[in-house]
Structure formats: C-alpha cells, structure tokens
Image (cartoon, rainbow, N blue to C red; front, side, top):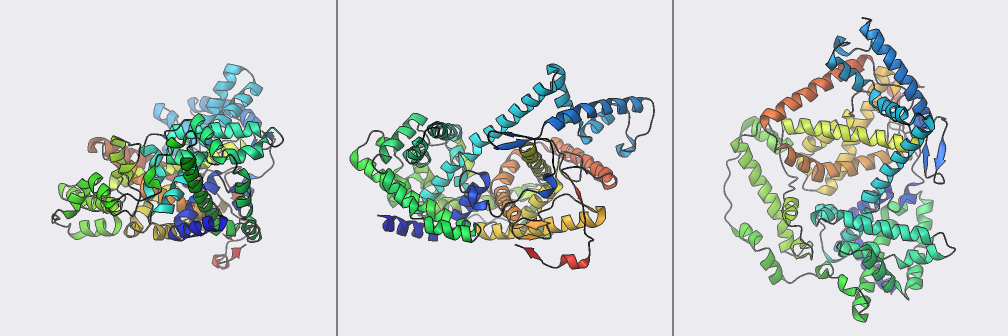
Length: 604
C-alpha cells in the first residue's frame, strides 16, 4: 500500500512540483507546519538582539519587553509636554518640518512624525489604571490576543487551503492560482478557522496526558482534508468523522509517516534544503493519497458521517457533457466571433503593452482593457471546460455574487497612474505594519521601522510597483514571474542598503549570519518571502485594490493622491536631514565601504 501511495504522490508532485513546493514553503514561513525546515537557515536580526529587561510568556512562546516601553513612554510624555511648552514660548525647534511649530496642522504633523501616537496610547492606559504594572499586563494581553487572532484566521486555516491545493493537484493537470482564496469564494473562511481551532484545542488538552497527544494526532489527522473537501462541516462533525475514519488505521499511518525517516535525515544533512525542495511536498502529496484511500474505505463501509464527503469531482473528472452544460455561456463566448478592437497608438500603446500603464482612462483605453480582460477570463474558464482544472461551478457550495467577483480578478490588467500611486502607499503601509508588528510581538517594543518618520516603508511600495510595471510581460507565467520577482527585489534591496550605508553610515537592516546572505544586505530567506509576497501582489492584492480604486470618482481620487505625495515628499525632505534612527532601527556600519565589498561573496 505504501509503495502505491508514494507512486501516485510522485506523479502528482511531478505535475505540480513548483506550486507544491511554494505551498509548503508558505506553510513553513507562516508556522502552519514544517517550520523546523527553516530552523537551520533562520537567525535573529543581530540589531534586534541587544539586551533588554524581558520576560518569557508561555514557556518561551514569545519574548515580550514592555516594561521599558511603558517607562520610556511615560518619560517621553513628559518630554513632549515640555517641548510643547517651549514651542508656545516661541523657541525654534530643529526638527520642525518645513518650519512648522504652531497651529493645528503643525501639531498633527509633529504628533505623527515624532511617533508620539504610541506614547499617547500607553500613557492613556496608564492614566486610567494608575499603575505601570497594570498597563504592562494590558499591553501584553492585547499583543497576545492580536497574535492569537492572526493564528486563528491565517496560520491554522492555511492547512485547509494547502490540503485543497494538493487534492486538486492529485486529479487535475493544472491548479488555478485563485484556489488560495477558495474559502473566501464560498464564504466559509471563519467556519473553517473555527473547526481547525477546536481541533487544535482538543489536541492541546489531550497532550496534557501521557499518550493522549500522540494518539489524537492520528485521530484528528483527517480534519484539514475533510474541511478542505467540505468547508460546510461543523467542528463536531469533522472531528468525529476523522476519528471514525482513523479507527483501526493509526498504526499503519504511523508506519507510513515513519517511512519518511530517510528523507528527514537527508533534510537534516542539507540544513533543511532537502525538506524544502522535496520532502515536505512529497509528504503532503503522500498523505493526500492516504486520505483518498481512507475516504474510499469510509464510503464502502458506510461509516457515520461519510455522506459529508460529497465533493465528487475533487477526485474524479466530470464528463464532458456535464461540463458543457454548466459552462454553456463560456462555450458560447469562445465560439463567438471576436470583435476587432482598435489598438492604442503611440506612447499610449507602448506604455500599455510593455508596462501595463494607462495614462488616462479614456473610453478607448477602457475598451482596450476590457478586451484584454475578456481574453484572460475566457482563457481561465476554458481550462475548466476542457477538464484541466477543477470545475468550480460543480462545487457543492456556491459563492453566489462572490463567485462572480472571484472570476473578475483579472491580473492581466492595466493600471492608471493614480491607481499605481495609491497602491504604492497602501503596500508601503502594509510593509510598515508588518515590520512594526513583528518587532512588537517578538520584543514587546514599538519601533518605527525605516528611514522615514511616517507610517510607510517605501522599499515595499517601490518593490510592488516595479513588479507590476517592469514584469508586466511575464504575468502569464507565474513560475517565471516568481523567479524574476526574487531577482528584482534582491537588486532593489541590496543597492538600497548599500546607498544608505554610503550616504548615512548606518544600517537599517543586517542579515549577517543568515543562511546564504550577500554582505548582510540580502539573504535567501528574505528573498523567498519577497517572492511569495510579490506573487500575492500581482495576482491578488493589486487587482483587488484596483477594483476598489476604480470605484472612486476622479474628483476624489486625484486630491487624495496629491495630498499623499505632498506628505511623502515632506517626510523625504525632513528625513534626508534627520533620518529615523535609534535602537532596534539602525546600526553603525563598522567596516569601511569600499568597491571591493560589491564583489559577490556568499556567506553560507
């Protein structure tokens, strides 16, 4: 049985190798599973590992350093009060942007760029509790709740998405990129999250016993597969069905998992690379085949709850006649004579074709874009008509209007200048939130990351925009797009770091000690994250944002963009003279920058 399961798993892995590797790599970075595969190549940022007063929460689960934050925040609050007093007395301040020091707008701008927002929040909590210890506990609780919310909504739920991708890959030749959003499409994301949460809670409680945790690991093993097949099941139904399916099969499953010990040893010898490139996707593909076998047995034996396993076309392809019936509208569009669209001319055509940019969304350009969108939509649905991908319209749960909106996520689109500007600021803000949150959760200290003072990290925004316009021609090939994103982001991050070191003599990030790093400016781990994030931007985030941006009236859109650009320019001017520096943000460059350092020198 094991040989047959592994043979089928290898066939599935061969068809979808790169996609399966990427799915498992995302799981490893999220911490859903396989996180130990990255243990040998990960290392904490040395800039952020300086000594602080700290406490460990939940057996070292998170190192929180909030005591200093509260004390420093209270001290900073007094300093700000004194600074405001001095301003009212007419004293000039060196850090005043564009000469601002009085008035409402000046106060708001000072308030944001100084980072005093977080100081005010902590001070407000302290003023209500009248106790730094109580404030300390409140901030800890809030941080833990946010972290648990992230795990509930994304980390644990991702196992369901991963299983769905592998199950479709076992039957079909292609897997649509939008499959990562299938729980949103059928409006069952929260329900799936709850089922996995309950399963993990039960397993954690059983782990308090001597053998309960080990036994229940196998009893509950089918739960993510069951939810991936039928997201409409309840936690009680999924857990109960998994227990009945695994009854009498725990030992054979244990032996099946044990048969991967050779691959585990190879992964250990290769510092986790063997796990990332082969063992992890091979293991999930094998367990997918094992679930398919258990599903067949459950149906044959008529065990209670087997009727919930109702996604027939997840495991067998539908007949062509059935596909022709449900996709009749698509077939009509495919066979209909194609309308000849007048192509754009001059600079408009060059920008649209090469960079996907529309200078002005004129009627002619809108019609041109619609024709391109129609071709992409029909091409995607044509794969379903031909039986190459899972037919979403035959799924037992239909998403209604959301189903149609999911089909409207055209990634081969053109973006207006104004849309690109807003996407730049949104991605820059997301990058800023990401880095600030990571530092806050890991170290319990709010740090305004980046060289600028505003809530944005432009390297993320510029990277996202460059990916959209420079790599516009490669969007039809996701694998090539991923490789080029890694290269582009690597070049951007390396030379940004080099420029800052030369001009400022400081480092805003340092990957020294990371597996495969180049002068501490870039590393393999970071580039893989950028590659995954870039794919998300191209195929999901940017199209979804653009759909919303198009709903804004031009009279509203343009002023918003102009105001953001003015604020960003002011931050650039001020930060050029007074860059955002400090503990946890920057580090003095200890070695002299010379042309020799540009030579490629991989530290492994």
